[in-house]
Image 1: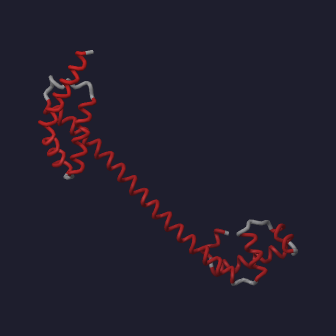
Image 2: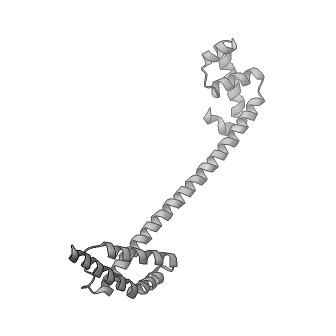
Image 3: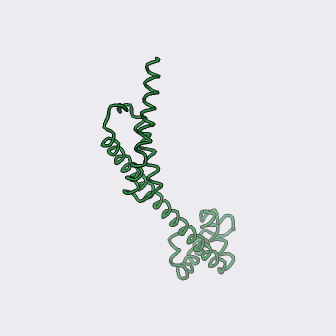
Length: 175
């Protein structure tokens, strides 16, 4: 147990000296490749975390320069891929939000046009149309409720749709 603790302390001391000796060179390398101080700082942290966590490295008996820059290159590529994926997903999400917002606005405007057009109809036709299309009642239910024949309901709907087709042909497929 004492030997393990001594080895860990020794490894930490070796790691600390490795970090102090190489962190600025790794930072400069990543900064040169990416042009971003933020990315360089992130990658340097990830590189040294990877080295510390990866138990395959013998911190005392290794040629660090080649190994360190190999790990740095790998971590930097992984980081850039991940950033590109997040960036692509963010732009897809933003585009999706824009589309949905635009569609919602258009839907509201179209509904308002439809309501204005229905308001211009005679009162009985308005009532029949609203019950059919907005309240989703069957012709039989409308006829019973208004105490008119089903054929009269059909005629009111046909007349309403004819007017709407003439004035709002682009909205007709909703109804």
